[in-house]
Length: 405
Picture 1 (cartoon, one colour):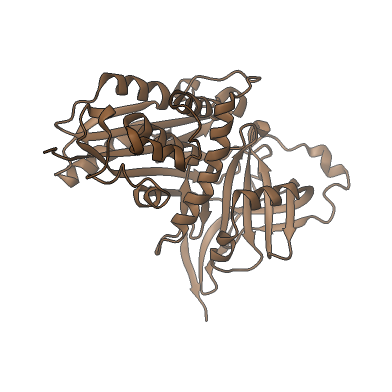
Picture 2 (cartoon, rainbow, N blue to C red):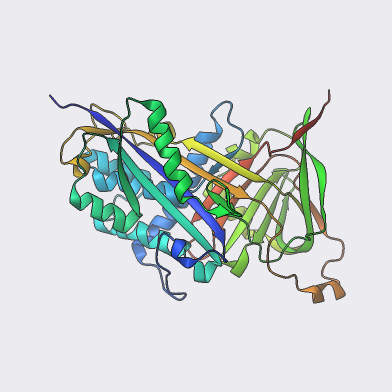
């Protein structure tokens, strides 16, 4: 009779501006002109599909407001499960990633290649630190081959923990997270992604405005403003606006999807797929836009276990069926939790604005993109077409202003 034990995965994605030392990156820098391998390209594309499937599942959960996940980090989590699993426990991962025809070694090397590419600080003016840790019970012995391979491909550390003492277990995880988090201005900032725009917002044009969480609930937030040329499309039929703003070095872009009016995001979320996003992106045109965004930070943590189970990861989380014997050498483990924590900060920082444009007519009669009510956003990598982050801003941090009928 096997004594079944549980294992937990904790996933953290930390991003910082170019000033952060490159040694903080979880992967070595890739060559700027390096072409992705075929299997890395496939996995990048498939991780984008995973982004929308996972997001839509999370959006259906009651009492969840803000959402923020990194699909490429979640894909690496699934890769870890496949690395430690056998038979259908491992093959389910390939099914979720739509990579059934990809060989095992190509799956792991492809995901590692993708993570290396998108975290290259030289080409993206950003250091993105990806940190994974697998927690096993005190009695588990991790197999050497698994430890080496998981470190090589996924930068995964391993630790033993007493799951019976839940308070102690949580404290241990939090202490580890605090040690690896990006320390900004000597303060704990959580897992932080700081926006570094290709063109900065006006530092002196930041003021307090109302963000309408709903028609009857408004909170006070700082809003930052800039007028410039952006990718823009106004979908009058579906009643929403799409804005695309590049980050520094233009290797990735932030895409905002916002309904025309204050409303729950459910209507927009139902139509959100990779195909629909590609359609909207194809209609973007460089347009003069007066942009106003909340100058806030958003810290979110999720347990993704049940959402991944809904997408097909059923065996690894079932103690009677899981075969994770490549981790411990025995069929005595199952996946109990998949914690994913991240944060993002909308700030004014960015490259200097090309002031010569103000002497032309290019900014005449700008469109207005005023993000004062719930919206969806994603960070899209230009080279790999992967989705680095996807989320929604429903309730930014701010004091309640008023209730109205």
